[in-house]
Image (cartoon, rainbow over all chains, first blue to last red; front, side, top):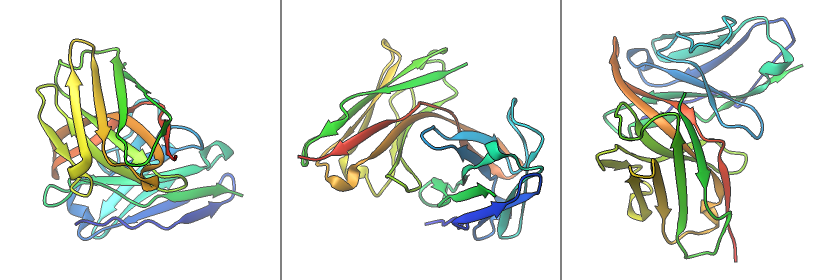
Length: 108
Length: 126
């Protein structure tokens, strides 16, 4: 089955840029979606189709995808961005819905 | 705006069947466009997809859970449901219902979860 690998944790100071990676075999050929989950809350879609933002999501959230790595970038990080972030793809050749293991973003 | 709300027992005994219902508001479950899904999250862990159903009744389950999972839909009530049989402590988790959108983009077929319920904790314990 297809596997997505995320770092368990990323730390960044307020105002700096956070980059959260999602690795997968030739992931650049797939569309990657990113979810933000704050403690005790349901996940919220923050980036879809590699780099698009749903309405209401700040422009500070952006994404890229190439080769074997997709990246969620959060610019000018705020304390309110502290959360778990999950990448997700659709893989029709195996279990179709695949989530990464999640990355805890800590704002120092 | 589609909204989803899970309901059901928060405590289930081992070997019994876990049953949850998701009520959809803000849109008709029969309108098409969405696959109605269940996702769970073990305490302190990541997201695990359980399965989904289309309003027509077509289902697809996670192979790792397929033998124990049944998802059904009641269009008259705008609800869909999850049954997970023979539960053990390993099934203790927060269970979310969500709407899955399936479409084609430049990379081919893809799907994402646009709307989520708030989640409900189900504990399996005697």
